[in-house]
Length: 332
Image (cartoon, helix red, strand yellow):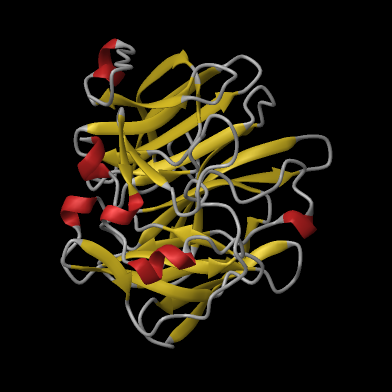
């Protein structure tokens, strides 16, 4: 499931014994296999992967669900979150969707894909990177923007292939301290995990964002647990939401499988809710990159030691019903 779940190979800066890695020696990992990026990325694109001034955004859809002309990756300016270039499949390799962009300053090989968290460790406004999500099939980029400096009050919707851009107000319903976010690969919605700071406490909220109207509803909220320092969200094609959290101190992670439905008025549960827990798993290790959901379950990169080595781990849907079954040989 791992290969099909990810829109492109999971890219990570390699470790080369004895010193820095040779230029352009960037690798992709699937389970325990390493692939040379040069095998599936054009030469002009490889130059751009060394630009330390961009961050790469990958689509929400799985590889097998993307058409031949779908956008496979988009590069955003790391400061402004404005698109610099988009990549589409040209046969067996990735190439630019339009003209070749200007070369940026050379830097390190491409880092792991974004999406785990958009806020720096202390949540300072100056450290915030605007959350950005990509639909490869719709060729649309969704970026949360702040005009008031205190909240994300506007949703920016950009075409990944044309200069077209439009906006939808969110009315300040999303905090600027965002822990995780994920796009639904089918429905025009996204889920956001943010922190709402009150006078005497912090509340973590799971929000559902309508990508067409910009409206936001609170699916669930709970007191913030400082034991977890990394969070991630993923949405399966059937609408199932996976919420993962890990603790670097305890070196453990937890994954919740959630059913999000329309809110029910007058219910004794979550008043603004529509949330049901379908199962949970807990295991050793912390995740080091974005998690990916499919019909079969969830895949995530896990590291269990201090040396940073990692492997792909998979949880099948049935694992959430009977408890954790972790396969450290790769996925499920």
